[in-house]
Image (tube, rainbow, N blue to C red; front, side, top):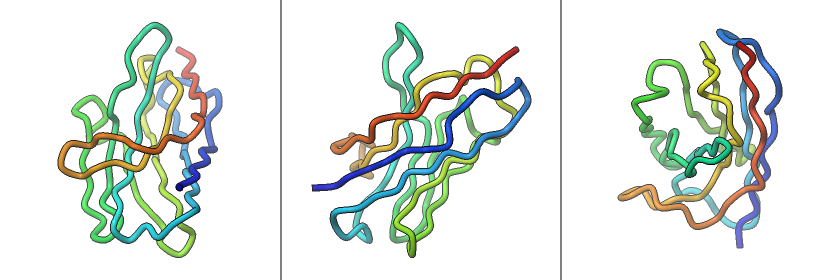
Length: 119
């Protein structure tokens, strides 16, 4: 069993920055991959970014490439999502998840953290 706890969401002006954190516990993570997803009201949950825990290899959705950075701290079992140049369309509930690297399919979810971007 894996427990994931997100934090760092909030209200920010367009063009601003936020850093989300996802603290993981419950098992060894060296062979896992982690992802961030987001869901806006009335929309499906979409993939945002992924990181391979062991190598640090990353992958991004086109909509956030160049603005968002996913990273991890092995010692803290924590994954981060640095979000810069935020746009109103980035507003959503952001979730972290453990994922399969080959298709980014999630299998454990956190509870989510709200990001609001004021225009």
